[in-house]
Image (tube, rainbow, N blue to C red; front, side):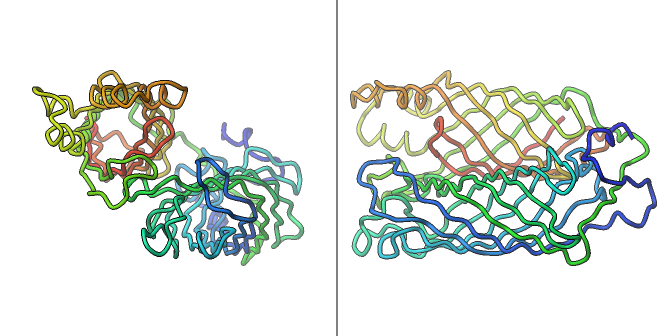
Length: 387
């Protein structure tokens, strides 16, 4: 019962076996408006963007072990149609966004919420060399969408909750298809949740602490990614190269929902090797110089068998990129400095075995977006195991 004192006032908490712990479903019409930020030269003209759709979800109530540790978040899937401010060049898009909403504060009928979503979007008018050369923002029909919203909500009745807030959307294809400048859209968000039964006020709190493995674990992960060897806008139509990834790191479970990690990652770029051999860029150690090695640290947040992670890395060996930038006299400025030294990884892992037991082996599969500082580098699919 130690967690009950940290949760929102005005709620009732049940014990094991109480029949009120079923999830409570809602339907939420959503409307957003904003404008794509101009972050690159030669951006196409555009006006305001408008998005409309529906978020179908449920209020968690403690049915699964992780829910009360996150203060009973709302989870859902949002279907969103968007007009991007220039129908002839940018067209429109349709997005499917799984999302989760956390409630760090509540006072009576008013609550403060943070919503995070990540999914996929379809664009009907991406870049085309012949028919749509002005769209340097989106180069492929299918992209990732990442959404972050900060909302205030007010319970109007036992079934209706109004939401108003602001946030941002980001679209990128992970450098798989050029051009890929990407779209960044600050938005104002409005929603109206309608609960099929009533807004729940009873939640389940376990009457005993859950066991989990606190030992320091060694993790090994192997993966493969895909990207084009290019800047965000040129050259277009180039080949797609694989990137092979190996990671070895230590992981420490510091709470039932949090892992801290520290280790090494090595990327072998076939695109680097192809450029090196085609242009006789190095006379020896060509495969070795196609490798990038980094040290990284990060955090992984656990929700059932899923883990959502963010890793930040420091490049300690990256000869080809550094020498190519030096040859092109492109080494000055903060952006070039960060791309030279910093790396990132954002993604999700699915664990084959339950994460609340003390089984030693922890096999998993994962999907990640790797970046050079804040710029997408490649999308990666991996398998790994903890020991």
